[in-house]
Amino acid sequence: MSMALEEIESSQQASLVAQPWSSLGKIAYEAIIEGILKGVLPAGTQISIDGAARQLKMSNTPVREALSRLAAERLVLFSANRGYTVTPQITAEEYHQLFEARRTLELASIKSAIIEPTAIDKISSILQRLSSTEAAVEYKQYRSFNQADREFHLAFVSMSQNRFLRHAWEQLHFHLHVGRLYAGAGVIDSQEACTEHEAIFNALEEGNRKELLQRMGDHIKNAETRLRRLVTRDKLTHSTR
Image 1 (spheres, rainbow, N blue to C red):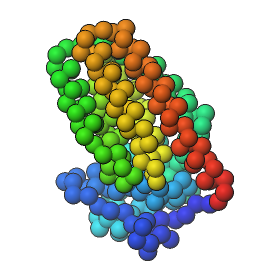
Image 2 (image 1 turned 90 degrees about the vertical axis):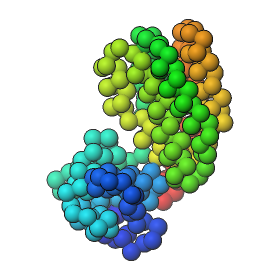
Image 3 (image 1 turned 120 degrees about the horizontal axis):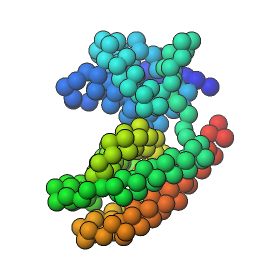
Image 4 (image 1 turned 180 degrees about the vertical axis):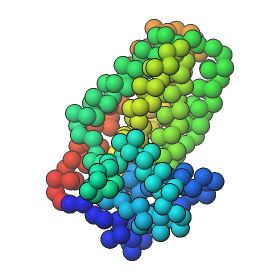
């Protein structure tokens, strides 16, 4: 059953929270995406542009801009009859396909990558930030870890001279969709992920492309296996409602 945003405006838990960014469109985007990733705006929730604008104390224009961006990222759907609604969580089969597509694109990028010292330095910096990020249950922590993880993998994709590979990888919006699974659980495999990231970086630093491909492929497969139980958890939760 869908739930109009106006119906939950009175709930402290469901309130959208404006963050201190300069762009109103970005403020609206981050507020709505926080609601989605935290599960405060569950699948099927109808998001009223007027209602969201009132909560965030801004005009309708930046809210509409934010929702258009979220629609492009497939976190909300637009229909002429209902306006914007939060998309369903990915199914177990979609989850597998998403990981499969990601693995294909990342390995293809590494095969065609030009590895330069500046890229190694950049990845080293991201890796340090990843290792020091607390992957707690709180939204800000798992969002920070998820964003840093995205930067880590994007850095490898960006080493490829094939810009279409990067575009295809970015259009997966992988980390946004998997990030929805962390609500209430946090990043359940942060230690394993950090260990695998270190192994990937070591292969990169040594210039061993064969080892790098092996490490990256194993990491993505392992991550799919580890996080699969979060997909099962959400399926069981929804079936009992």
